[in-house]
Length: 223
Ligand code: UTP
Image (cartoon, rainbow, N blue to C red):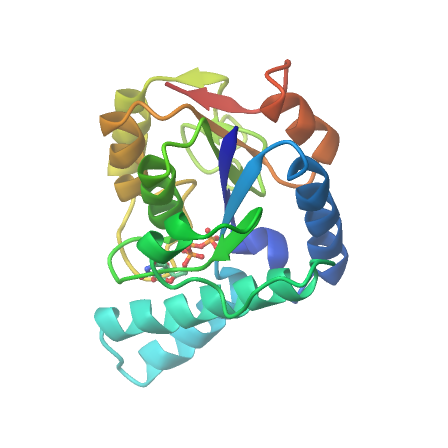
């Protein structure tokens, strides 16, 4: 079984680096990698936002801001690699092709090119390796129709079609470090290759285990 995770940078680095979470996530990866081939694409989190905000103050263009964001994702990917007990190779892979060809049991990478986020990278990686499952780990429990942090009446979705997900995301902006549940490139990729996709909170490892074992779980199924 092949599983591709998109690990939102907000999990690894919400305000500051969450070393406790990184440690737990690595132990979880080591456990599940006994029975599955694992790929993890790591997001940039606050690190990306902080650097991009300063670069924007200096009038950096959006393309350059994306490049800065990509470096932040790779920096976080380095931290995840450093927390794995095995003699894991580094630096993180920089292309989907190289990650796809890796023989490692746990393959780790960050971003690749401007104009999408690590969700897009993870979905394309899932497409390329013909993953059985694409799991998007975020800091919220479900996909909502609007930001649950801002609106009390935000509606949760337990199941969404690819097209409905795309409709929800179409209202969001494509600028460096925009905070969306998944990017459009990812949504279009999972649609065109009918990739089974789960979106759930990355903090609850028991729930996550249920999800990848096909049991009932808290989160949104896309497909
Ligand atoms: P993230 O994947 O972390 O984006 O990449 P995000 O969705 O804004 O944040 P979280 O972590 O999921 O909350 C950070 C930024 O790096 C650039 C984009 O600007 C993105 O917003 N990036 C990342 C790219 O341009 N290409 C990539 O392949 C990855």
